Length: 91
Image 1 (cartoon, rainbow, N blue to C red):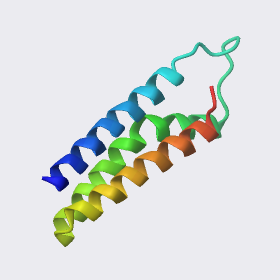
Image 2 (cartoon, one colour):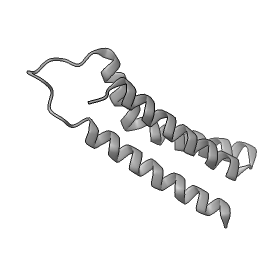
Image 3 (tube, rainbow, N blue to C red):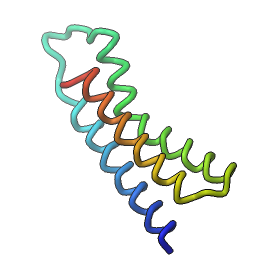
Image 4 (spheres, rainbow, N blue to C red):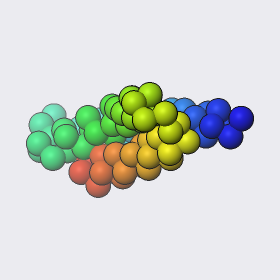
């Protein structure tokens, strides 16, 4: 039961982080300038990073059988990728 709730929380945080990355990055660019490479990497990190963290958590849980630990690691990975994406591309 606890494991299912942990993975439900992971799914909720992942969706929230992905939506935040999507809405934070859809602002129009200034005067048609191309964003620097760090901003493009940040955009990719904030949009797809949470999903990759969940996928790695599921693979880790399946490989080890420790689903609760994998859910906690996935949750941490989601937060880290969202923060890295925000720091690299703040707009």
